[in-house]
Amino acid sequence: MLECDGVSRAFGGVVAADQVSFTVGEGEIFGLIGPNGAGKTTLFNIITGFLLPTKGRVRFRGSDITRRSPDRIAALGITRTFQNIRLFRPMSALDNVCIGQHVRTRATLLEAVLASRGYRAEEARVRTRAGQLLDLVGLGPRADTPARELSYGDQRRLEIARAIAAEPRLLLLDEPAAGMNPAETQALMALIRRLRRDLGLGILLIEHDMKVVMGVCDRIAVLNFGRKIAQGTPQEVRNDPAVIEAYLGGQTGRVTASRPSPGGEPVLSIEEVSSGYGQVEVLHRLSLRVHDGQIVTLIGANGAGKTTLLRTVSGLLRPRAGQIRLRGGAIGGARPERVVAAGIAHVPEGRQVLTRMTVLENLRAGAYPRRDREVGQDLAAMLDRFPQLRERAAQVAGTLSGGEQQMLAIARGLMSRPRLLMLDEPSLGLAPIIVERIFGIVGELNARGVPMLLVEQNAHLALEVAHWGYVLETGRIAMDGPADRLLGDEAVRRAYLG
Image (cartoon, rainbow, N blue to C red; front, top):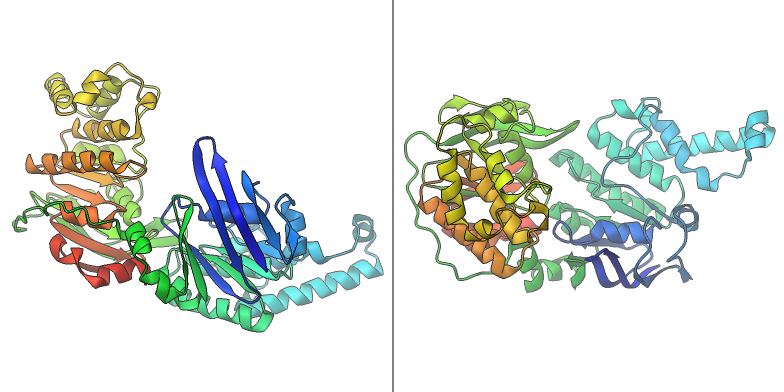
């Protein structure tokens, strides 16, 4: 039914999709998975006409649709949902689904203005069909409810109802389970199976929740850095060495860190914390601790809630429940600048250096909360610790390499003299040799007494450098323990790949 043949897409020098080929058969549920940045949504945008490929072809039921517009592709029989919900929020659930049928209606604007007999008959059919689709997804009783008043899970189902209102033969679902609780996720899986059984739909699914992917898909293709690295049944994909390495990272042979025994009052204590974005609760009553001398790592599949936890600790998100304490003092809900002043430095995902400022200006910005007279001394010590930054002290940060920017981000965090350093994906986008250097620096800093909370996509590397690990799964702690024990635990792989 759908054929992607050698599809590529580049954004400047970044290749988001690289010679990707796969097919989806009639009535098949096909999964498209991979780590963040693998190119999955880029492919969805190409298939549905929102992006043109740099090269390659997309065919649907024998017709080349590579350069068709999104509305023409929808009329041919491909519709989609979006990663971020895009409903007409003030309108009722019924009206949202009616809009989805627009490509199948024939009445003209003049007929609508004059309320002709043909227009009234068609409008009645549209509203009847919309009600039937709401019943199919379990929203029949909420037909007159404005979309903005629906729960998050109901809004996700409403998006699906609107997409199938256009009578597609192929439905593309982009992370439909994102933010759902376990009960909503189970209901979604049942709905996906029902759409195939009752409507005969083919479904192309992007999803980070591996229980969903492995539970509903007939076949799965795996992307990593824009390339397809594996394809097969769920069982074949789950056991593929290339897939395991893409999600967990490869074994490096690094000697694991010595294990200081947790004792005394923790540096950081998180107790029963819930947090999220808008209607979406990402963290569910999560608890963890970091003690003196420890590197504690948070690992888990994309969308598990790792970055959300760091953002909650640093004050960028307010916890909805629970307590966060730094050496016994409550910091949960404090403003970010107060959290920094209390002693937490957060090195965010993507480094986030001040690109128009020099290396020295970035380092001085890290010391902004300080009022002591030793900033200059610490600045000199930081340049000694990171000699590459000394060589580029007057250089604008935006012109540094990715590895140099990561070093600068870490050094800037250390300039605040933190009592706890939080690192979010320090290896992201870096070459393996640079990753080794960055993690060598992490180990050296910890040996000097800096406790750390580390989020890292390369689970093997994180567990090799850490003392204790927590495995997150859909916003909950699935397991924790000494990092060296987790390193070889089959349950860790299941948390990533189902």
